[in-house]
Length: 234
Image (cartoon, rainbow, N blue to C red; front, side):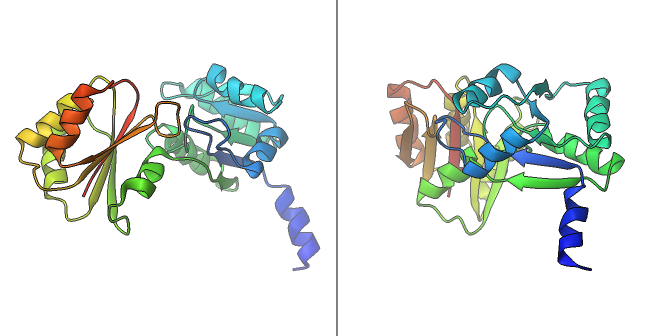
């Protein structure tokens, strides 16, 4: 097929872009991501108010549509209809890469089911887990990512698995549970492995704690435990 014909043919495809956005510092966004956010017909947002802060900073006027974890079938059908009508859409989360510990993967699954001809393109951006791994100093050629751990049911089973893992383990934890989770790991027998805890990655009060579980716990207990945490265990 003639290359020019192929380009024209592909340009007619409706597109859903999965756009990574900053996890703290609003400068952490690519030129390509900014261009896509300007060019699409609508931006699908976890929280339109949060995304509007980013869009306003870069003078992007693209209309936004709310899409989040509890969006019902009516909202999904609205998005499907927009794609059917030839609209190009960008999906963003409040922070980071959509589909990683957020409901973006569900929308992609439904779009692929209803409209397999839609082109779904990733626009790379920040991810807290990858950022933290990059400065951990721990082996990263193989790692297991757990996202947010369950609050109660099944949590102890996962923590025991993390303790026995042969590969580096990564998970997210919240302000209210970080000390309790690390304390539980200690009680379950995590002693000699190296632990890295990153707080508020890329944000004003970014802090990294390193050492054995006892050292990290001691330092965290002395410090402010506000914010979001990435925990990495060798």
